[in-house]
Length: 110
Length: 114
Image (cartoon, rainbow over all chains, first blue to last red; front, side, top):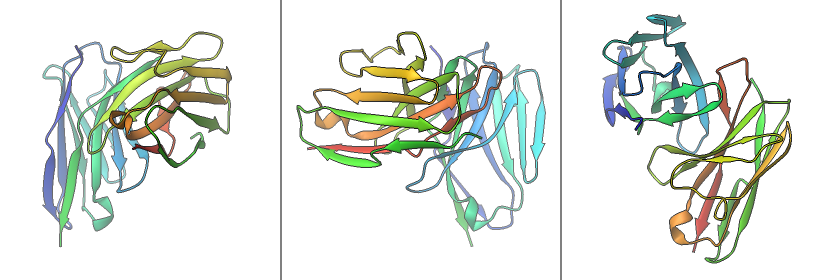
């Protein structure tokens, strides 16, 4: 079945770049997504990438996709305290619902 | 992006009772989905609810336990029936358009079953 794997925790210093990694198993995935969930809040769609793309950049966010290895990463440049949250990787899209990873807790050290 | 609201935002219910959660969108959307997020866990898709057809349930979820309605293109309900403490979760609806792969989530309904 479909599976999405992420590391549970990532700790970075304020001002450094954060790189959150994700692997998935469904080679037919159309889109891959990154969502952000702050404590007590809902899910915010950060960005998504079509499966035939290698990279997508949006301000401080860079998404890299290695389709051969089924590996997705989210890089956050100049990490700030407001970036502290759980980041979920998800795959699917269109008429299908999404399959989510367990989420990566991003911890920012001052 | 669509603005999605859910009611109630939270509830505490007795075991054996049922709760109906409403999801309202400020624009017409093709697809609506219902997810469950158990405490400290990831999101799991319960079902897909498209207007004019029966909901499609994922493995492990059945209509008798989670009946869904989708009467129009802006509204859906999910009922959690005959609740047990294991049903304590956050229930979220999400929406998507047929020509867009963006999926947006409502704020969630936090359900506690005692």
